[in-house]
Length: 106
Image (cartoon, rainbow, N blue to C red):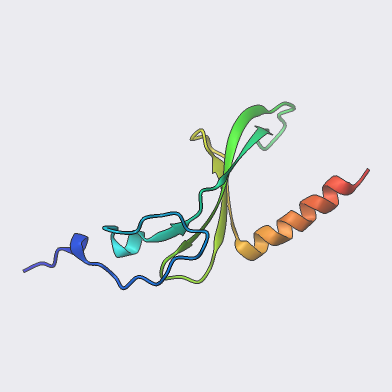
């Protein structure tokens, strides 16, 4: 008889303090810790020669698969657009420093 994987409940370790997901009933391979995210109003220009951008709402979220130790920062369109960037947590920290450096230049 084939095992019904939808009823398997993995032993759940405590969620990180930033996780807001209710994991009950989720398939083990779908268990992802995720925070609430932050919405950012942005003007996004497509790559290439475009000279103007379009308004877009971005959502920045932290997540980690339950069975993995790597945390990710996901920057994507909240409006289901095509913008998306997924960075490791450490890479996001380096990007934050680089953005501060670039924006501080006069």
